Every structure is written in C-alpha cells, then in structure tokens.
Length: 274
Length: 251
Image (cartoon, rainbow over all chains, first blue to last red; front, side):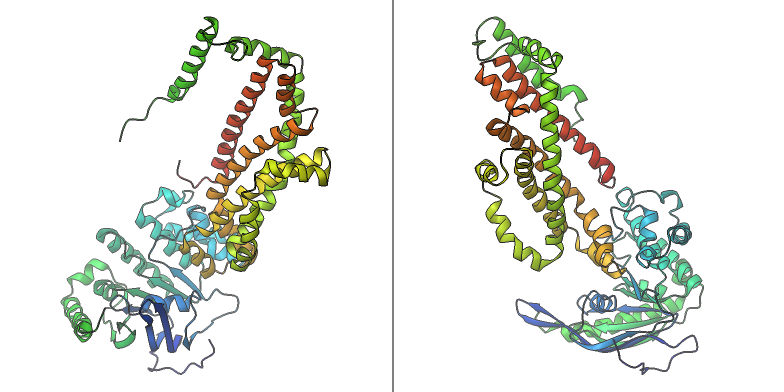
C-alpha cells in the first residue's frame, strides 16, 4: 500500500488520482493448480469519478474490489487510496448479496459505519436519517432486514456505504441480483446520490447497460488472468436519468462497441480449456 | 399449505391420556398402588403445597439450577464464541471438549463430591459442567455458521476486537446460542435431580427420593409433575427471552 502515485494517464481537470493499482496479482488455488485471477493489473481511478469495471465472469474484478476493501491480500503489486483527511474510513463496500446486518434495524445498519468510526449516537443517527430519506426508506427506519424486499435491502447497503463517508466507495455488482425494474430504479437513485456527493466510486458490473448508465469511465477487462483491455470515456453529461440515456442514439453505439470488445475477448479464449 | 390448526389442539393428547388414566384407575383396571388416579395425585400434591414442603424444596432446587446454570453458561458462551472466532483456540481446545463432553455427567458426580464435598458448591459445579458443554458447542457453531458476508461487512467497516465481537460475532451467533441455552437448561434440570437424589436432604430430587423411600406414590408423582411443569415453563421463559433478545428472527 505504499506505491508512489505515478499516474498512468494524465488526470483530468476534475481531480487527481484517488486509487492507484500497480501490478496487482492474485492467484487462487483450485483442483487444477493455481489459477491466476488477476495478472499484473494497473489502473487508476480519479477523484470524484464513478469508474466502472466491466468484464466477463472470472476476470478478477470482484477480487480487485475485495483487495481494495482490505478483505483479500494481493500476491503481488500495490494499491493505494489517497487519503483526504485522517481518521476517515478508507472504503465502504456494497456487496452483491444482501449484506444488511440482520440483527440491526435499517437505522442502525445505515449508521453502522459511523458507529465503527466512533461517531457519537446523535450525529450518526442524523446522518443516517438523511441517507435513509434519500433512498426512500424513511417509513422503514425501524424495520429489520427480514421485513424488507431485496431491492430495499440493497438500498440499505447503499445508504450505509454513503453514510459512512469513506474515501472511496466500492460496489460489487450491487444490483446484480435484482429484477430489471428495481435495478433501473436503484440505478437512478445511485446516479442522484453520486451526483450530489461526488464520492469516488469503483463499480463492478457485467452489465454493459449499467456501465454506460452510471460510469464516467469504463474499464473493460479480459478474463483469466484479469487485465485491462481498454478504457472508454462515457460522453453522456450529468445529471443523468436512466430513461433519457436509453433514448440517446449514442447509447446504442456505445453498447455495440463494448459488446465487440468483450466478444473479441471471448473468442480469444474460446479454445482454451475451461 | 395446510391451514394452521387451532391453538388448543396441543392440549388434546395430554387431556386424553389423563382422562383414560383416571377412568382406568377408578375402574381398577390398572393397579392404583403404582398408578394412582390423577385426581388422587392432585389431592396429595395439594397437601404438600399447603404444608409448604413442595415450595421449600422447589426453592432450593431453583437456587441450585440458577447458580449452576450461570456458572456453566457464561464461561461456555464466552469460550464458545472465542473458539468460533479464533481458529488456533478452537484447534487447541476442541480435543479436550470432544473428550470430556460425552462422559455421562452422573459418572463425574463422585469425583465432584470428592473435590467439593457434598455441600452446595458441589451441586453448582456439577450442574455447571453439564450446562457448559452444550452452550459452548452451540456458541461456537453459532459463530462458525454466521454468513461470511456479515463478517466481511464487519471487517470492511472497521469493526475490530470488542466491536467485532459485540456487533457481528455475538448477535450473529445468538440464534444458535439460544438453542444451546435451551439444551443446557434442560440438562440443569436433570442434573439437579440426580445430585439431590445422591447427596442432599432437600430439593426436588430429595422430595422424589424420599417419597420412594416411604412408598408415598402420590407424592412421587407430584415430584415428577412439578419437574415436568418446570421444564415446560423454563422452555417457554427462554423462548420469551429469545423473542426480546433476538427480535430480528422471523417468527
């Protein structure tokens, strides 16, 4: 975690490098020997950017997030998250699976990150209440997760991540297991939250639509081992709304382009053993 | 899904058995020296209530159960959770636990009396040992079966040490831990009676043993019924506590 910040690409006017990943490797033992999940991955995420990692299953994108979240250690290379002030949490992660703690109410779940940082009860409840309101769960603040639908549970996780006010937010296919309609609504809510807070977000998905809808920049990865294939700047201005994007003719063109990139990659691997 | 049966339905089988018993006893189909009619048992039981004999013994047994249970359940829960959280503690302690746990507790009683005499402490220790293991094992399993995602959430949000224990491990283990507490309490009830039969001049176990010695069969049944009621009430009480302490568990 000590690499100097030597940007790979010149940072844009909106901020410097916030996350620097340099030569990160990660292997996993399997029955067939060690499989390289990430092979010498280099990437930068800029301050205040919503950066989306897209790639096929097994490209190591979730692994990268878990490394940044401190839940895995890399087998090589370094990661750095630039701190803006002391004592702020480095990361807050939104997982694909429902991750609202079953034993806490919605209110206590959203305040959980702040509680772990030692923020006083009154202050963290006030912050939590704000984010609960923003994700439309005000009526359910006292409810337990088992009383909520899948979409509402994900809203709790998203609100918790924002409320804990970390340096960066990590989102590992947070809407991946939701139905289409709920997913679109939550994407809209996330757009709103991001555009309001401008927190740096690294977002993993394998949905091209989701990447284009949310991202400022899309990093397209190949699988086994995970490497960066290319980076795409998303031209759509903010504030964005999901439904407006879908009407834009540019949108379809970009979908096709990313699809081609991923398709080429798939063919390249078609002959290799699974 | 079949319709939910009415609440009173679980009373049917005990009521039927009692009615049949009463009828057969009155008709002298069964030997009332061994199976006195339920009404006769009730009448005999009532005299022990009125004389205060039952309460005095019940109180003594409850005190022993309470002390022994607390002495066994608290260390059991703490060590179980620690064993669930820290692999090397688990691997170090597990062989000893596995070796001692299956020894019939009644077989340990002579040793305990050798070490602690025949006073109250010996009874507490005896009950505590019995309660300790099921609580420990359930606490450990409770921690080990916490969904990994919640451990990840705790770690990602910076829960360390005591914070992790109090906000992730303990609440996550509580539902299974409560199953262990129930098992432990049932065992405490069994063990207090054993201890009192072997070495006591008071308590429910003594009450029953004394009834046998003077061949007061109605009194003997009274003791058994009181223990049954105690078991039922304690189970209901633990359920009630669980509903308060584990409110996130689906009803």
